[in-house]
Image (cartoon, rainbow, N blue to C red):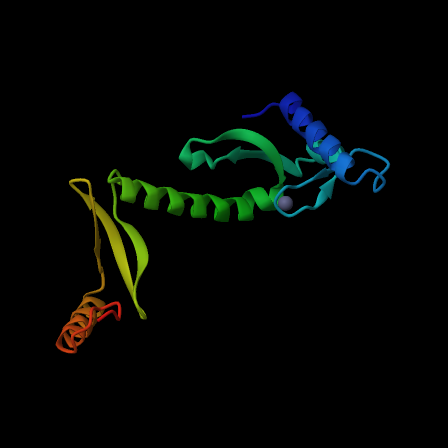
Length: 155
Ligand SMILES: [Zn+2]
């Protein structure tokens, strides 16, 4: 966990950068939250309105690297972490190293199917966890084949 000296260093770096971009806007150091752009004075550190943010997210092995406001660290940070986790899972699945199923929405032409990505022997497999949806897709695929088309609309 970043100590107060490290947070002060990040505050000063952010405030200096912000002052270079907006030199005539404030007469004292101001730190903008990099997510919501709300501005803070140095007192925000003592009031714990700014906190250390992991980059990339801590769940992906990130380290504390900058300050965000408490609201962003609690809410937006969680959303960013979740999206980063999703991206990481897809990359791991495509690399064949994902250790658990990952829910995806697969598109076959105009057909959208909720599915799960699995890796097996280095191959990526998609399966539908929803049996009704899977049965519907199989009927759709059979209809496409009987019309001489693939499920993605190609002939
Ligand atoms: Zn913020």
